[in-house]
Amino acid sequence: MGFEARLQELGFDYTYDKRLYDKAASRDARAAVEYLEELSPQFIFRSVHFLENHDEPRIAPLLPFAKHRAALLLTLALPGMRLLHQGQLDGASAQTSVHLRRRLSEPANPQTAVGNGRSLIVRPQPAWAGNESHRNFVLVQWQREAGTFDLAVVNLSADRSQCHAPLAIDDLASHHWRLADLLGTEIHERSGPDLLKLGLFLDVPPHAAHLFHFSSIGKL
Image 1: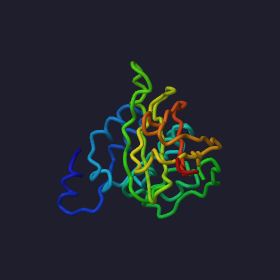
Image 2: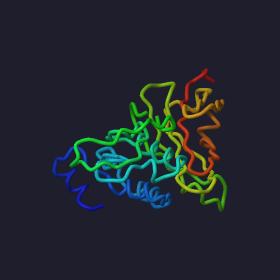
Image 3: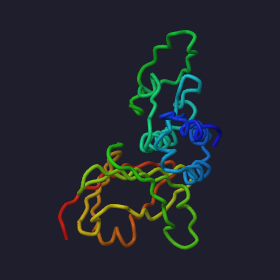
């Protein structure tokens, strides 16, 4: 882990998580998932997550759009500090030396144009015996108030993957839930008892990402 954990112990509020960037930018999905599983929640909360900074190449030409989108949701969904580089939200593709003190004017890329409350990195469970694709997921749950919460789902691999997502929500089984994907058009309804017993079943295409907003539509 380098010196980041030690720097946090010495009083630094945040340290760069360059290792997560390296794994996400290199398209090594399994390595990114395994790396996050090894970290303590405290370390993640006090880390700076990013896909671009002044020292690195622009991410837009480095990753195909689907992989770029999944990696971006990962960095924005994790607890901690999020860093967005100048031009990143516009999809800039030209890296500019900081010594120039200016950057190339580029048209915005419309394709590239959460995180409140208590966070939890959820450990995905196998969808069925012998299916190891659950290890391709990063799942982050956020909740600010009762009766509603969000789940960020990122499949970092090049394979379609399945898992069950166990949800750590108080009073989960007492509600009927509506799920709306804020990154798409999917809308589902699930019963609280089923979610508590089985978790949320996910079947996600390669390099795909979802941001599910759960809201209670009635008590059981």
